Amino acid sequence: MILKPSFPYQLYLVISEKDCLGKDFLDVAEKSILGGVDIIQLREKNTSTEDFLRKAFALKEITEKYNIPLIINDYFEVAEKIGSAGIHVGNNDKSPSSLRNELFFKDKIIGYSIEYLSQLENVNTELSDYLGISPIFNTDTKKDTVTEWGLDGLSKIRSLTEKPLVAIGNINSYNAASIIKAGADALAVVSAICSAKNPEKAAYEIKNEIVK
Image (cartoon, rainbow, N blue to C red; front, side):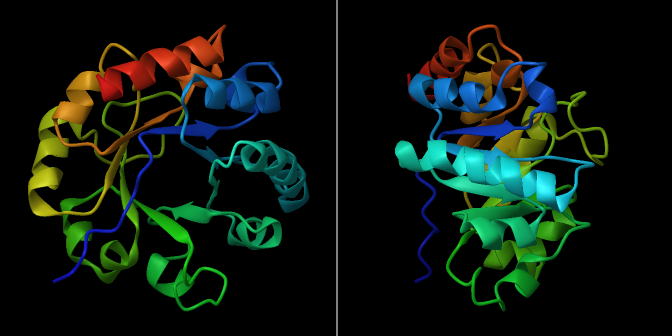
């Protein structure tokens, strides 16, 4: 019997400095944790490895303070250098099967973005700890996606795999409950928390929709 991988996190913040719209992204991260965020991913695009590292080390101080896992998006060098809890990769990044062969990532959390149903049958899905279903609804924060899954697409994926599913893409307190009902184990949120005037309140409201 193969045990379903454990993914005990329900509210997953994906943060970048840009998405915080001029607010201190470290302050946004801390307030979001106080509001109920269980896990954080740092996703910085079009930046140098040095800049990413600087931000990652600073954010890790906060996540460690609250015992919250820090996931790094794409940059495996940064994930390794800061000793992150794991990494999240997509189709154009280093694959989960390749990462699992590296000593550092052998027992780390690896998330893998699903953009095609055919991916559910590959070895990368098998070796991942959770699948990022991206996007549920199209969003301006990530425009290089392939499939807008919608609730029906999410339900279809749920019927085909027992892997933990992390839904992302235009998620907020108004649609959170319906996405969980459609089969998501966790909700990954960007703008609804990062750009909110009160990130703690925004996180609390979404978390409340997940657990009620």
